[in-house]
Image (tube, rainbow, N blue to C red; front, side, top):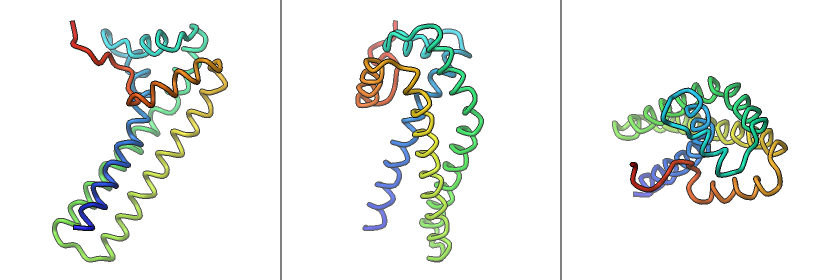
Length: 148
């Protein structure tokens, strides 16, 4: 029971870390896929200038491959950990995999923090406040109502 609660808490923590990277993915995908416009929505919600939008998009584009690899590695490590726990793996293997998952989660958080540190100076103080508010609302910049 205790292990189950711990795994649920770990899963929620990972979800929170990955949700933070949603901003990056949204801006990047908005630039790539017609009809997605998340980059434009972020630009509108924060009142970003074209120069600000371009600078932020460059940061996300530069980080995209590393973010993708880290996310894939984290998902695989979590899958492996679940499999070990559910199939009765030995305690040493479980502990090793758990440490790997924790390290990858910490790496993801550090990468996200560093990205925000790069973006912060690009934004005005008002835009930084608005971005923080958007994160508090769930970290996603999609329209939450029905699609037309």
